[in-house]
Image (cartoon, rainbow, N blue to C red; front, side, top):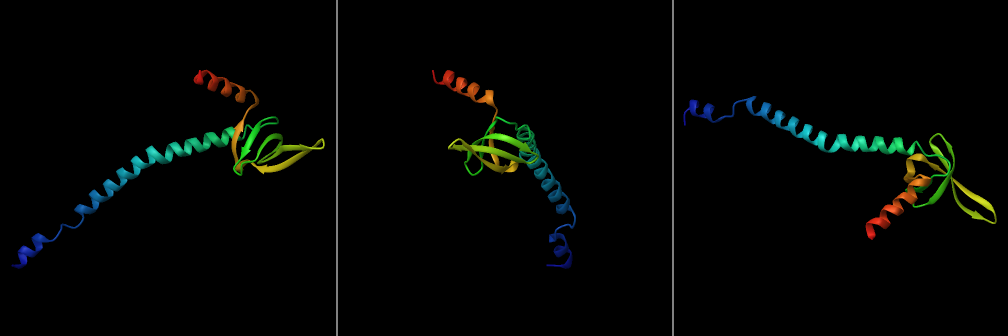
Length: 119
């Protein structure tokens, strides 16, 4: 093999790099629009909904505790979880640890929808 043959066998520098970066950029854009952006939108909607927590709403925490909101203090909810001998048992729960929030009228509407679907 001569020296000219060796130079022809070597890859051209720069050509493969550009197409690689172009392909990786396209994959990132697809991933962003199909996964990241919808997840960010869903998280923002959830946070906005949780900020509407008010007295009387029912919640379930990430730890599985069920209760009724007694007071809201910024990012902390005071939740009534039980009554013992007429005394209310209240817990303070961080808003970030609330898994589900149910408004008072929302629970009966969901039960009505489930009853219609089962019949």
